Image (cartoon, rainbow, N blue to C red; front, side, top):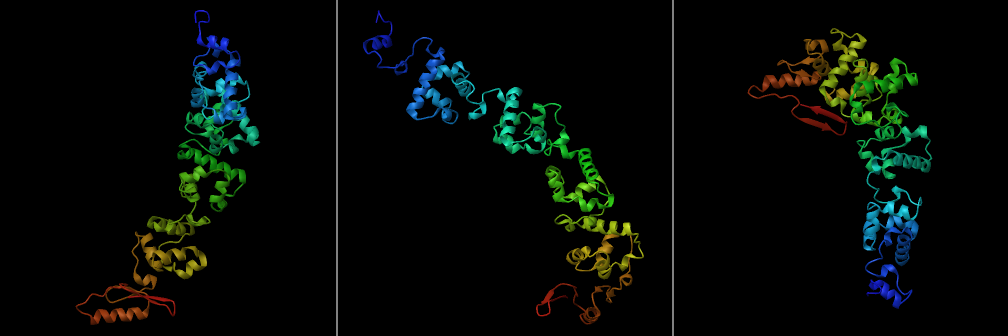
Length: 373
């Protein structure tokens, strides 16, 4: 031991070429400073575990390297498997090939730009098409999740960080959080779309459909306005268009009394229908001039148009005879002469009782009729 100073040297002298340096608990001084030694030892383990060199990023992580005794080399390369492998095999691997990207790379613009351009080549995306074709899902697929976190998860903010002054915010389909809450942004994109497509003013409601907005990549705008093109146009052009001018109204739109009232008031205002003409707006009128209202009145007013009119114009006092209504001796409105006779008979004969109209409903299946009494 005085002569060899080391058990390893002594054993190697006694048994030459029978053991490798890493068969011993400790390696020679400065052993890990030699890249060839590290590579030789790594490849011995790779062969033993039947791991190909190209499989290193997927199968050889930090914990495996520590288990194999590579704590010292890892420390020398900042505990980064990529940096260590890049020293052993220069240029063979990329940072994103590994499960964990080295610390600091998420804010390294040069690195991110190189990886981004590599992604474009793989996806065959032209640089000028980046705003329309590079999505958040694509960026996550190509391991940009850490970088996106530094930009509030916004692809547009991230891309503008990589390529300042190359793209404007209007080039992107996906806008930053809160973008569509600003009515100025909404107005700008809608007016630009109308002008670009040469849509006449009166044709805007028919042109501005949900499908059209989605085709323009404006799903975020639709989401902000509950998926309703009508709400968007109303926000951009307040009071200019009537809901009935659109191809369809939103789901459950007519469930709101306010919407029903506004629809009739707007309809009448645009056609100059005044107080004297309102009682003439019956089923026959709407069948001829605007049939879309009929199903709404059937559902929400039991087919009684006068109820809709009276609700929509509370400032007017209407008399039953203006609607040609049949009025019982107690002031009750009846739907037919037969109902009027029965109602008046019951009022006269049932002195101590209470006559409640439409308290029950009878269905005549044979003739597909519904009677209320």
